[in-house]
Length: 126
Image (cartoon, rainbow, N blue to C red):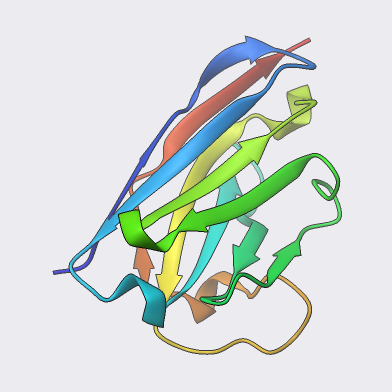
């Protein structure tokens, strides 16, 4: 059974940094395409960043240059390093996995992903 468990969220002031983790189990991690999404109250869920099994990355324009997605395949773990956080980054952050390929230079839509974690809350105050 595929399971994704996020951790690392918290509350902090603007300008700070956080690293989110997503521990994956129940499938061959290296065969999957991984992504981070976020959902803020009153807004649609937004794709933040994604990464292929060979390490190619894509980012939403709102986070490019501030967030970095990475993975440790040996540990079946996905990461999202978030720097220079802003109040508008406040949201529930989810990791997602897809047993498929995405060839465009963009974060795939949420419909592309099959498996989702429960999310971890990030709150940034001004």
